[in-house]
Amino acid sequence: MAHFAKISDTSQVLAVHVVNNSDILNADGVEDEAVGQAYLEKHMNWPAEKWIQTSYNTFGGVHKLSGTPLRGNYAGIGYEWDSDNNIFWPPKPYASWVKDTSDAQWHSPIGDAPDDLTDEEKAGTRYLWNEDAKSWDKITPAA
Image (cartoon, rainbow, N blue to C red; front, side, top):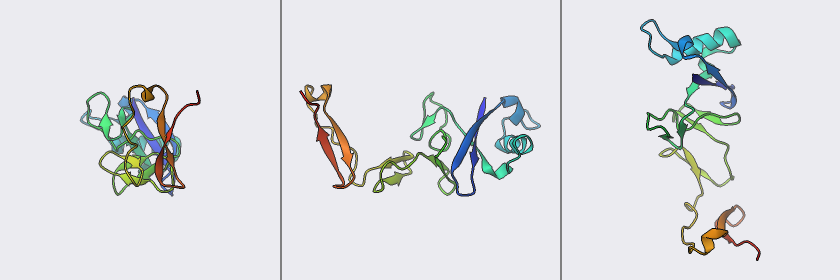
């Protein structure tokens, strides 16, 4: 099955549709995104250029079955289509976070959460992003 994201005029993903692979084959019997786009335009009454193929197995720029990743992330409703970078971006988690095209993910402006927890702390302690302070706060569960 092939998956196509329906894109709005503002580059937002409105829906993701599944299409039979047989409906996106070109004359040589090879899967072709343009054939899928034409099929969806005809059957879903939405412009062909507003259908972008997405891979169910792609997340964070990696294909989970060791295949070739497609467009950074599997598209989801509310995601943003970034045609300049050829990436589907999930919703921005915090106002200060920035896009990283190397892994198709959002990152805090100061980097990832610290990885300094002891084995004992790892049982329940974690770091949460504090948007006001632009810092990672260590959260320890109440005893």
